[in-house]
Image 1 (cartoon, one colour):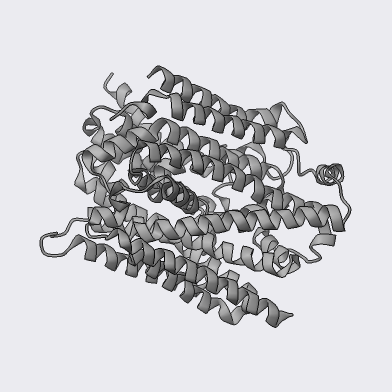
Image 2: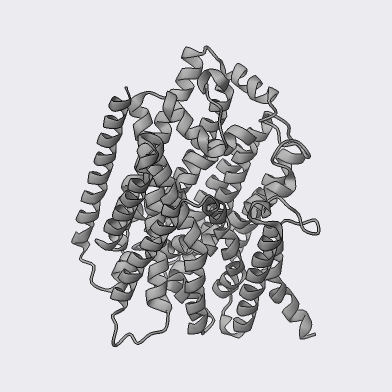
Length: 483
Length: 60
């Protein structure tokens, strides 16, 4: 049985690798020659690729592993948490995507750090932000690699952890370097479809198992969950108390504007029609995927020990436990979807961060080609990320959730820069905003500890709320200081 | 600008109510339904705006 499972896992994993590599090789036909083509596909992506690369980049393995577990342990508040991100992203994309797209076309932006530097007339700001991207996203990228290692180790045994990291390293390097964003976008599309298909299969099987094998009905499932207090978020009850809900959701509300790997995707569509298609299909993907993932966690909980006869250690153990009881082929397809979700997120992050470093750090571009600096950064960043993941430090996953917190201070400069007619005059405010926000994030994280960031209040407010306030203070105080 | 302002206001209201209604108004099992419905409405409002909003159909 164990050998049969391993053979099936290896077969499907091989199928995934072959499919992705064919996709990445086919993407080379687009003939990448310039940095603009390498970073943003020359702004020629159609609706299909734009939408799926946006969705696959946004939704990492956090969904099928982390969110399933959070739904299982904490209940329906997890749905509200993920959907608050969804509504906020729709709002930001609907209102601001065409503005960013138009300005990016006019000014020829290829990286989000270049966008901010150009808006505020400060190449130094662009350089500092590119370094911030690198530092903030390093733990997040490492956590994705670690996730792949853990997934492979769960399937094949602990000795396979390092092989998982090596596999991730090879795939990320191959699929990124082959044709830049073209190979990343094509493999993202394949992986995005794989993620949806895997979630449909897993949800379908759990629903079938609960109703046919365990003879549960919709009402018994609901009453079971209600009895455990998992369908209620009334004030003071359960995990999702309102301050926790706010501090968990706040950094993610502005993800679409603060995280460079998604901002850069707004420069890529071929025309406004493709941009619109990108938003629509992201909306369809995001809603369906979120509902399915939360439903998987909630139904697994309703199934209780009859469905999962294991002692579960933490939220990340729920999906692996489900894979142990699911039919073999569904289990291996979901197993590979976890890897796909991680790879599609991490290769986009590495390409975006490396393009920012290559494009916006100051060096003599007449002597050293920008593309070679970017490709070298891709290799170096992938090696560093793999190295951190290989050390298997437990706190890397905790650190990774801080990525969005440390990028949150970019919100005011981004919003003001995009919406203002003459943002150059706010240059000092943008610096003050970033410095104050980052200082608040660093000091408070040190004070409450990484695990206390979203839960432990300081003077009544949690860290994300303080960072949010700190980064807006200069913009609110400036008009008053002038009288 | 008019439609953008209306779109932004409606979506902000949906987002604000997303935090308030399930906590203070509805109770289980309606909380889950509320969140599913408000997200669907947010998607439909966005879909409408993507085809009717000035900045989306204006040629740049």
